[in-house]
Length: 471
Image (cartoon, rainbow, N blue to C red; front, top):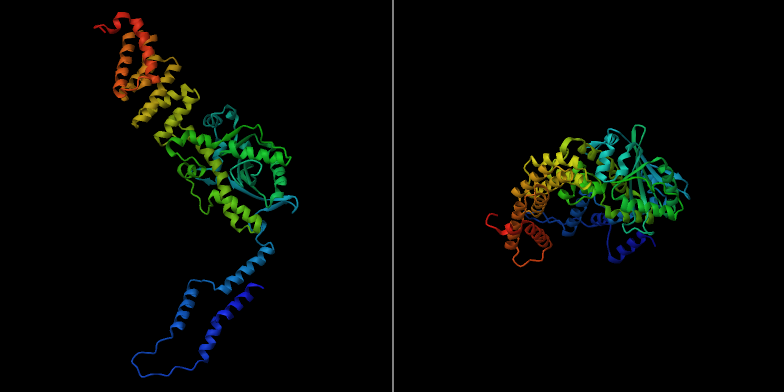
């Protein structure tokens, strides 16, 4: 029994009438007798309510139950006929055949296409040294965007393992005078092998991988799927530029949230329209596999496309910021200090010193200045520029009295280089007194014990002069 028959039986059982039946009944009823009254006769309450509901339905373009059932039947017929399949909804082509193929959406973007603050073609001007610096990876000193592969995947989950499948794999690359984006889509589970074989051939001429959290997730997942499908994974062993680590090095101090979506908004100035949240994407694919209705997948392809274009844009933007002299490519103090720290962590002291000195010319919060002065003092020490090192530590003590690092470094300097043992001893005892005032019940601190050990050695060197009046 179909839906229409069920509705008709329900109407009869409840004594309901359609709009047509109600109008016919009203015409058959005798006209009401006119009464001599000053007020016109009231419209029957039921009829008035019905007319009001009908007018409201028409004004709001609402459907009746019958119309809704008819629409559902029509959509079901369309779905059974395959009119909502992915190749009818998205602009693309089926690679292979029904039994051994997948769906490919290919789009070419001109080099002057704007993605946020930059155009895609700016990535071709990327400085390989800047790429290696931001990635802390010397293998990327030969980076060339023309041979790089910008990669992202949409998967059935984030847990990883053999049960996780990448149903949408996107790869972007520069070819001729365009940036080409290929989005490979699995219409069902048996599309995976031909899709991976197509990608394996595409990977053949690529020399670098660019992704976002791809070292930890996307690449291992692709390697696992290739192994299970006995397809060679030609990405293994290639230099890998994972932008999530570069983003954290530069912006973690200020932004906290370094997800690609937040980096797009805060750094690149990208604002998406018609996007879908990431956590909904797996279920949308499962729904498609079950219903074969691809209409809800358009936002998924848009989300995926934006992710890959932002990889290109972010690569170009980082290099542009680093191209400008002395950290002027960064507008915020936290970002400028992050650049100084990157130089410090990679032991590039000659590059660190001018950046740190430029940073200190401006007025910044004390914690940021303290960190910068500490790195600057250490950099001077590594370059044997001891007079400048001493000046940095003394400046740090002026701005942050009783700073432990500055105290210890100056004590070392006076003990071993200037041979001013009294100055070293005075610095140590001053800090020791301050510590005991601030922590009267903590005599077992590692810092305090190290300081006491150094003071004891100085006392032995000074002999009776350590506690003398002349001292």
